[in-house]
Every structure is written in C-alpha cells, then in structure tokens.
Length: 460
Image (cartoon, rainbow, N blue to C red):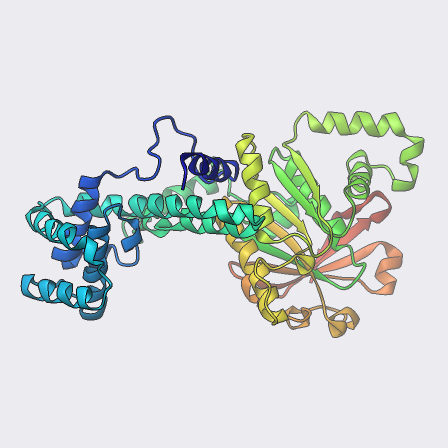
C-alpha cells in the first residue's frame, strides 16, 4: 500500500471517530520492535502471561514476520496444552512448521535470529507488559482495520468498513474495566445511601417529568445504561409518550437525542410545540407568538433536544452509533436517547430469521445505552391479543418475546373506549429487572396538547 493510500485510510478512520488525530502518531505500530519482541518472548516462555492475555494477542499484530511465526507456534501450543513449550519442543515445532510450509523458506534465517533474540530477552517485567497488552492489541487491530478499510471504501461498502474499525476499537475493552470489590466497597455504598437519604445526592435517573412517577422507578427516573420499552397497540400514544419524556429530559437540563422512524421531524416538532407551549395543536396558528415566546423561555434552562428522521426500516444500530460519534466530535454528548421505534429499525446484519433480526436490534440498543451511559427509551407493538386485552402484559408483546427479556423496564399503555372518551389511560408495569412490577398507574391525558401524562390519578 502506498503512503497516499495509508493516509487516506487514516483519514477515513478519523472521520468515523475511530482514531485520535495525534501529532507524531506512528504510521502503523505505536509499540516498537523491542516491545513486540518482549511480548513474543513472554508468549513462548511464560504460561501465566498467556493465561492473563488469552484471546488478545494475534500473530498478525507483529511487524517482524519471523516473530509472528514464532508467536503463532507458541499460541497454538499453549491453547492446546495450557503450557509453554520447552526449548526441545519449540525447535521440533519450528521444524514441523517449516515442513508444513507455514514458515516460508526465505524466513529461515530470520526465524533462527528471532529464536536467539527471544531466548535472551528479559521477561521479569511481565506484569507491566500484561497491563499494556490490551492497548497493544487494540492498536494493532486498529492499524489492520484502517488499512483494510481502503479497499472496502473503494467498493463503497461503508458499513463493513465502519464495523471492522469499531470491532478493532473493542479489542481488549473488557480488560480496561475495573473490578468491583463487593465487600471492600461497602463503605462507599453506605455513604451513597446516606447521602441519598439526606438529600445531598440525587439518584442517576433521567426525570420522567412527573415526580410521582419518578418515585415509582428504582433510579428516580429512567435508568442510565438501561433500555426502557413502552408497549402498546396501534394509536395508543407511544410516539406521544416518547416525545413528552424526551422533552422533560431536555427541560431538566439533559442533552437528548430523538430518532424518529415513523413520524416526520416537522410533525414531531409541531407536537412538541403544543406540549411545551400548553396550546392545542390546532390552535398553534392562532397563538403564533405566544407559542414562540414560551418555547424560547423553556430553551434558556434546557439541554439540547436534537431530532433526526430516518425512513422506516432504514436505520440500524451502526447508523445510530455513527450519529452519536458525529455529535461527540462536535462536543455534544447525550444523556438520553429516544428511538421511535425499535420495531421498525433495521438489524445491523440481516438474516433470514425475523426473530433473530428483532433480537439483534434490541441487544444493540441496550448495548449502546451501556456504552454511552444514556437512558435509552423505545417502543414496541403488542400482538392482537394484547391490543384487545384490558391490560397488555409481557406475554402480549408482538412477534418476539426477546424484546421483554432484553429490556430493563417494560411499561404497557392501556386504554378502553370509555377511558379514551374521558382522556384517561393506564400504565401497567409489565416487567422490570430492578424493581417490583405488575402494578398499574392511572393517568390523565391532554392529547389535544400532545400531553401524554398530564397527571397521575391513582394506583392499582
């Protein structure tokens, strides 16, 4: 690959938010030859090193082809026998690799020199190298993914190029997650509970906008790093609910991303205008400046509320991740994301199995909630029985029960004809990972003003 192609590859990755634009960053390998030799030596000589770095090191990460061949031999042996080869076995394995032509003849002298160098390399600083291996593996995987992306971009296979780079970014990610010492951290948990009880610390939830509803939720609002699912039949107000909860989140000072796959962004904005200004949708044209003034006043104390519209069935999790990354590049991070709605998203990788496609969408949404530390809200349809039932329960979810299993909180929207006439509805807490469920909240609605939940009437 030419220097120009490598430069293009790096630009592609940078535009995706995949690599930092750091001056002096090595063109391919951040970890120098000596460091790579030390890793090769540890692979061949230290069983504990291999146990602690299992799955992270790959032969293709090594710039020196002879070292790569030795690492391949060492890893293959360790994976089978869970120990490193002694000198006699190593030499036998090298001869077998030469006979099998997995080591090229033109590399024989280099392999001989590498064996000598690896044998003489000091490995006493194993613990330090272990700590650095996750970064090494991620960097090398990134380098290869960037180079591979040039051909993919030339074929206009942008999704695959992005996914390859994203997978490379995830290499070794689990190794950066700190352990939680259950017994050792009891004092910290006690302090947090005392501060919450005293009112000096707030729970991490994103407010629902209704204090009484917040109190019913474990996090005193929508849970950060969790997926909340609103479930209802057609025309039960799922989109209206998502928009109202997004508004309340923004008006509480949080940055909110709203993705609509069903309602146009213009209609959604019109509905939000009615809600924020407390004016019926049909009357907005008669109160133009009043609505404008109220919305501008609300903006002064609010976070951002960014709306993006995608055609039905066109947006997948990869597109959502890229949208989030684009805003991060503009120094805007979100604390709440609403997707209206997941049932009409596209799976990142489509299969012939609709259940698997649906499952992958919900898994990806929950993963994004965890990766980005946001409260994720979306909606799903009930099946026919659920649409007819007085109360839609978790078994009434349409098509794929995995949606209920994956979500952290499932709330169904229920409304009889009599309740519809009175402007009332019921929210049934159908399933929850972190709190009690199977109870009902009766609510008052003002749908002419796009207010899904004007107040709580009672509990059942």
